[in-house]
Length: 107
Image 1: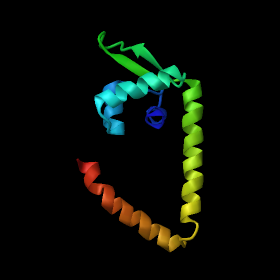
Image 2: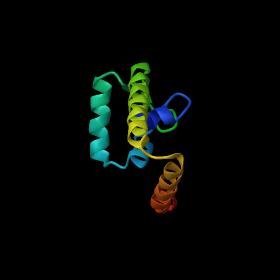
Image 3: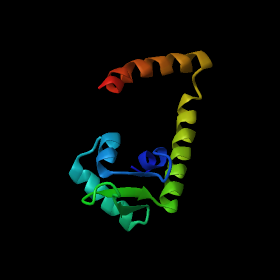
Image 4: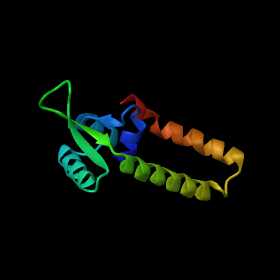
């Protein structure tokens, strides 16, 4: 969820509905996650300026740091996993992975 907010650009904020679409979790799970992340100071809830009944979830500076650290850690692990492959094998793998996820991009 933190990375989804980080990717959103601008003020790094999304509605809970947009977060549901990006993270593919249930609304109950999303509410629970927002609550926990807010308690930890990683996100803040703000009134939606367009819909008085809604809220916007905004990444805090601390949340952005945690998201960035997680991405750096992920990239380091991916590099270690892929280090045994040649450049050609990496290209083949990338092509196969694109082929696997293509149906989900159109859904």
